[in-house]
Length: 459
Image (cartoon, rainbow, N blue to C red; front, side):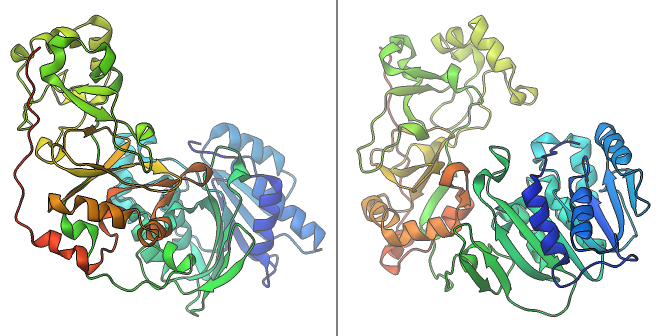
């Protein structure tokens, strides 16, 4: 199965304890393990029943991978209460179960074929945006829960706050989210970032959700909104904001995606003078430093005019000869974008009218978000940098001061997606929602600024 990640035995035992807590199974209980793999959870249920001297429920394990299916079917062949099926869990089903437990596969949309993506979009409400397969497993499992049924899944925690998972959070509001248990980041080694055990009950009895935090603290929260659940889990009582960063900015976006930075990026010390008319100062996220002036060491070669239009190939001149080098051209032709664009175009068309303006820059992944001003509007950020273009260029220093303040920093820590090793992943849709104090509101009432154009003269 794509996305299969073995579950450690201690985690299996912890999840089975939660599954049967206060509600032990009886012989007629029906239990489902979707995507059962080699049978880790089935084995954990057998252990639990033996340890507590309880009869086995009727267990159904579903597995689509032939090798895992064969292993699990042989492993439990001697248990009459256990049936392992070779099937696709995401196909339509009408059964109902008293218990569902499992570790659904983690497969991002990039790991699915175009046919699979479209097929899932037609069937699943959670197959929206850049969805992950585990969201669909959640939806199907909830649909198969019987009255008073209980579901225990271990997944990445991202569904709590990413916009893609908003449909799933909306569906979960019809259930009782009994518990969210955050596990240590290294539970699966480097395979799963920030794992979370979720316990849902098909009950109309509403009650607060028990939170077990990674540091061992416990709390209870009420999750009654489909927006990000992270603020209430973090203990933040938010008031609706009158003004946001998106309100006062012309653009909030990630930087330029060329699809081949190694071809289009040149170290300034090695820049051919004949390429200077096509070269603009550029910076990557790793080159940004908090509290230090903006400093670039590289140039980005643009086959685009200042109005954002792609230059015809016959007007590329020295840049065309540079890109036509066999090794560079081979690298450019290997990109997916060449199926719909000229071979020398960027993966995404750069919005030059916004890029060449005064702006604030920040890393896309960082332990603590920080913002560095580009006062002249000459630096082109690459894809690992987010840029914020204020509507009023004169507010750039005041805006930078606020965005680097403890207030804004705490808000970002409460709302940004978690990356590995305690880092945060900055995203434009989160930045746009960042509350802005009213004293910065004058920026949105300023007239549009004229485009800043960096003049380049041939050497």
